Length: 294
Image 1 (tube, rainbow, N blue to C red):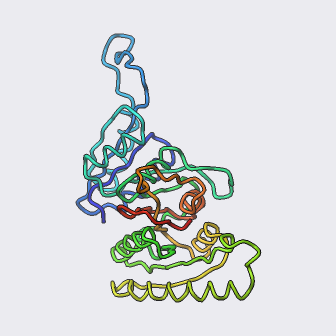
Image 2 (image 1 turned 90 degrees about the horizontal axis):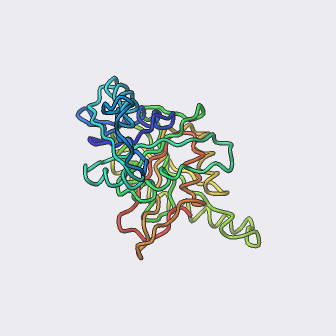
Image 3 (image 1 turned 120 degrees about the vertical axis):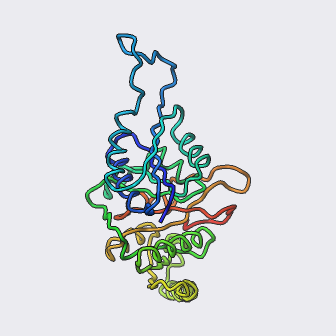
């Protein structure tokens, strides 16, 4: 599906999981770019004890990653750069016209305080291309081709961008696409959580969702809709697990209109990224200023 994919790697389990799943997203003529970022700040002596040129940091890691990628039948190029991982990753993606960045993350779903790694979080926030986040955990489904794809939506432009990408992936893999709208009871506070209010909110959400589904169905993709009530990120993760989703596609913030980065911690997208039972593909709407599932 994608022709130019970037997989930053440090040889860890999460990075390996991301590489293996990214290879499945690659088109027949795709190239996977492997990037190792050397974070050393000192210039150092790049010779061994016998004054011979020392192996560059990351050489063994990249060699192992290349072997995995080529075994999957994908063309590979690799590079070692020095600097801050997030900066080098984003810079590389821009200069090499990358279409998809794939990154791993640590974490088991029931570790409540576990956060995304700083590099993954920063790349998801600032990348101008979709980012595929794969958790290295036994409880994560990594099924391909996808049979069911979940796109949570709140009608924002970020969610619309996720829907467009989700439809593209669904059409490519023949998957059914589930549209989920969550009525957030926490957003309104306990004083107004009456049955009548919840019923009205559900009715409005269902009407908006059906309209979105009707438009999406014109692409030929099979569409299913659902409305649930509760805490948004929990409802998304629960639905994905119960319905055995193979991929989640979600919109996320980039930078705000004043140029300041919008942080992921505490947002719905960030919480889902570290709790979802399947890989999550994030995308941000270009030049977007609205909210996304927050």
